[in-house]
Image (cartoon, rainbow, N blue to C red; front, top):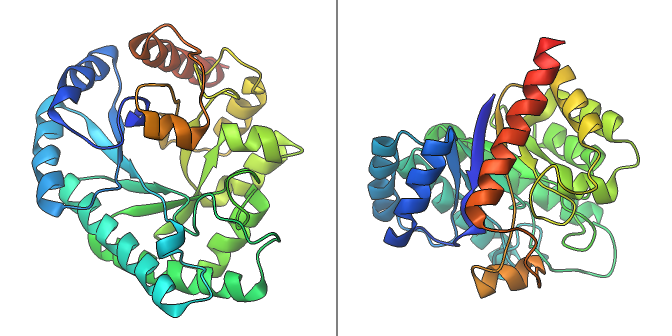
Length: 284
């Protein structure tokens, strides 16, 4: 298993001030970091790829699509903008050396139609993701499509939705991501959800029900770790937690109060928790 930390706990964009954090994460024992990729500049990410290599940190990346570049929009120009943005993001992933691009880049985050996805939206989503997956193959990057809870998205909400979508896209570079936070809201049976996802599982987010320190809330962790390990998954487990460091991120994630001592404490405790849970199951 590879263990990563999503940098959205600290920032929405890499900058010099993050170097001590990166050094600390490496010293804790993290294998890599998940880099927010919202501002697209290949040269910028190529530079950071070298720095992260020097630190010995591997990387994945996370991105989103918005209403302005929604891949399932009724407007062709907006859909085209979505495909173009995802392709540019993949170019930046290649420059950074990111192995996986995860997130809800299948549709616009936080945009709602008042109903579930239509057959036309599904068709657009599948076709456009296939174009993106073809570009991902050229870039050497794996796509990990994320299902979100109903309060953040209406296109993909559960593992059944995500599996159907990945099957329809039908490209080896397009897999799905399982996120414990969203599953805690949407899935009726955690074990069955993970078993359903298993053959298509490309990435895992470890996230508590309140988005703070994993292992200290109400997520059914035993069921999650049991089922993930039973699938044979041995890829990235990335901590996704949010705090108050950045007002824009706090507003987007609806975090209004501090729920941990420090970001460093959260990262350290989360890594120990993941490694302990995996080790227990590998010994048995």
